[in-house]
Length: 378
Image 1 (tube, rainbow, N blue to C red):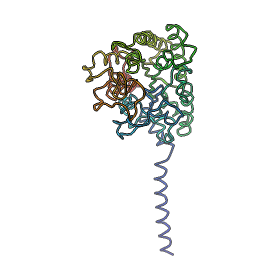
Image 2 (image 1 turned 120 degrees about the horizontal axis):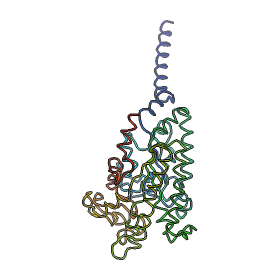
Image 3 (image 1 turned 60 degrees about the vertical axis):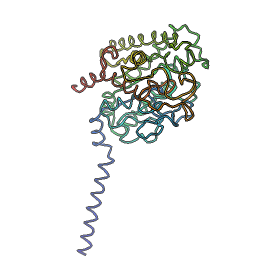
Image 4 (image 1 turned 180 degrees about the vertical axis):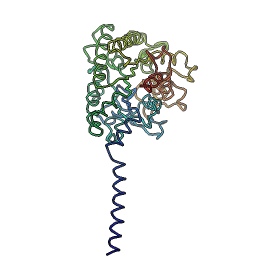
């Protein structure tokens, strides 16, 4: 009997230890809340410049899930990122101290504690307007990205409760990059059947700014309080546009005009929103100026080639898709562009650094490092 009693006690103790381990590893109570308090969630919205794999889960032709995409990624495998390696959200995650970037929201692996890191809702091919990107089939248009953000909050609320979810969202950082496709894959695209193409360019730009304002206010109403908003870049200097429109090596004058009209109005709109809200919620990143600097003075940033894509074919390697059959440069660090439209990892690193520490020439009203310093004191 004594031996049986001793065995029973040993079994009971082992069972208790096992249960303690299970609870500590999988509890959704105090430990999960502690994770939310100890790090800043990060959310990403927009297009292919920031999509890290959502389109892998969609029936879409806007995909980056095959070689040589990802050739310089840590795994050396394609992930759905439109780059040879890391993209801006990966690098911003590092800047804010996250252990890992937010996963694509459509990934089945995004669950449990990973939800508290944040989520990436971006989808290649989308624009500000719902009509943009129709040629890419199934994509997460901006209203769907915002709907998924609502769903995300419900999922997190089930983990940590309503109060902690609100806190996680209000203390988070948001990055949104959208607008370029409204020009290159809508207004100036021969394959687009959009009625808005019939508008004069200044009227079209005003339409985009008006619709973008609604998107940003929706983000604010969903709890976002620090939102990095990037501009379009000098779209006319992308290898695809050079291949299609350039006759003497110069950038497309019409697309440069579009960027020159759109980006200042975007910055002005963001300033107006901040004034209305009485606080600096929306931070403007002048990626147009950043990219223009890369193109006009590539050597100053460690680049050698600023108008030819690393991966592609035809003039400027700007025709068609980047595939295993394409020309592929041996040293990606020398190129501003990875493919016909998207920056190399090296260029993305430059963008992330300018967003973090850049002067008011690039960031308005402040850069990311200032945001982090201010928020650490409140």
